[in-house]
Length: 127
Image 1: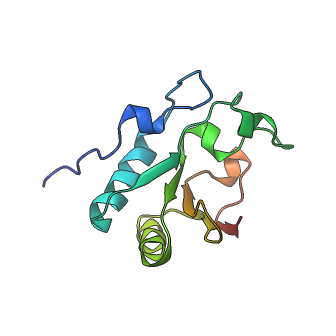
Image 2: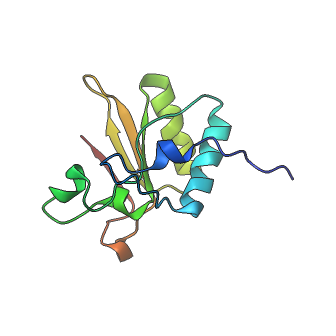
Image 3: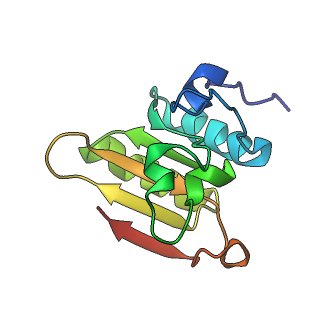
């Protein structure tokens, strides 16, 4: 059985607040690589790991979100590709999906956080 390639660099997955921390969950990375492999098209990562001090995480009223667990990623896509990412994510057991498909900056958020971590699962939302 052939191994799925790693499609993502450490630079794509690291925190962008300046700390450059890379605390991305390897099991989640394996799932995302499988989704990317099956999709057959490149994924542009707009956000992956964010440390608790990242400005977006720091201003959240309930504390840091899914990105700070290393089990979340935002993939820039729209239309048909967005539907394919969602379809493959569900096929691979992703149960938390955020959808931003209006205006500029369209993306799909995928995460594998669970209610044990304080996140409701399964869950889908729009931005």
